[in-house]
Image (cartoon, rainbow, N blue to C red; front, side, top):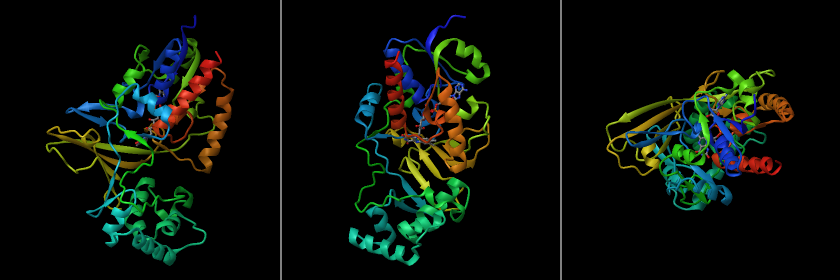
Length: 370
Ligand code: FAD
């Protein structure tokens, strides 16, 4: 069979879409396939009740990279959404990230000096020279009160284990801000694409052939025969038939509900930091777009154990899994006509801007050598 395309791109997620766009723009022929029934991978948004619902978890675009920001703005206008999540601890509401608003609510302090003094006193009381677990590490960094109210329950739900059994390295530092600034991110560019992420990806891959509901690994030899090069953004261990074992993830379960009220929680993201509430957070999607629809849609997010076949969300980058990944990476480097990219192909948590950056870089490298 004659080769029909320059590139077969496996995955219509952000990595695949950016790569495909660049190749197409350079005059290369591309075919994109995805095993899901929709494009855009995990940044997929679907319109329900005129609200853009983030199907795979809340996604806020933020970056310090001007090139990346310029690139994504070619495909969407971005609104002025600024991420300012709230924490709900047993009905008490606190601002995140930890800042002067949080400290005022916790202790009634109004100046940075007062807040610093309290944190320092609490840290000194429970300071541990060599923290052996996440609890000791967190208390050493921010003292026991912030830990108890805002870190412990949330982290235990996220990882499914007590903080005393979690390694200290998970929390290397905890951003503490002594200003009244509720903006979660430090990046200069931030927003949500007007019209949703799906429309943005649609524009990126405009004019490129796409086949959905198509699993590359079920008929790999056939798909390989169609193109000179493959860009693979699926799980790297699946590509090699799990020959070194399965790379582990944490997964999420979402419960989404349409409510007959126009405003449920007054904010897009509320984290539930007590241990008893079973979910980690509630997303109210309309607030990402400053929506004024009559109804609202909320999603409760649960952190759950992952097993093969479940949706992989967060890679468990511990020693064992990283070592296993290195072995897969060595194999991947020997596949001359395959490019492994994206969060699953590289077994790495990447924010969207890093995905765009790495896909642009890889496309430039590959296209310039052709
Ligand atoms: P994906 O979007 O997963 O795309 C891979 C695609 O490959 C999928 O569509 C999949 O179906 C397809 N595929 C896999 N295997 C096969 C196969 N065998 N055959 C055919 N197709 C296949 N980043 C931010 O910057 N801001 C945020 O606020 C943010 N929030 C997040 C929230 C959550 C809960 C999570 C988990 C991540 C978040 N991220 C966020 C990160 C963001 O989701 C990723 O950076 C981005 O989605 C990765 O894109 P990707 O193309 O690598 O992967």
